[in-house]
Image 1 (cartoon, chains in turn cyan, green):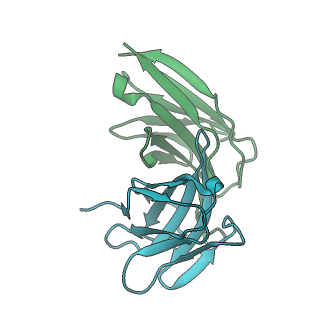
Image 2 (image 1 turned 90 degrees about the vertical axis):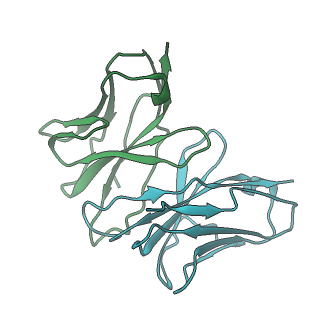
Length: 116
Length: 113
């Protein structure tokens, strides 16, 4: 049973470039969550997606950030025109049912984005 | 979502039992209590979840008093590999909530030889 997979594990971008982070949920999971962790801080929720739908994007910055979870393929977190403040670890989590009372989110290993 | 308060850091020695208490005075009727563990440069790992009384699994125990305003994560006989950050989360996992997790600062547990 493969867990949540994220790639790349490390990503270096220069200011102004685009960053694409990929997340493949656990088998059988159709709910994906993205979190960001700045250095020496806790994780902050960004967005919650189901297949082809964004359910909650209340934690996403209004500009430059977007997310999708297509019918086929991994979920993508896209950051356009990156700035140094975007440097962080980005974690993806997946769950089976999403909103049920005892669901559990399983986290991937994260993508560490460094903006030069 | 209910706010949680837990100690910033704790120290322990190998072989000891460690208890980390989390306060959640505003916990709602439908809220579950969940604990995650995070090692440096890794994603959080689910440890245990409970609603009331006591829950035990192969890794830890979770004690929840009757008023549910606090909970205690108990790690039996810790080893150096238990050095990590432990997060207490309280949230509604129901139809009225999108399931997002709200992480606080967590408790950094340092286990010494």
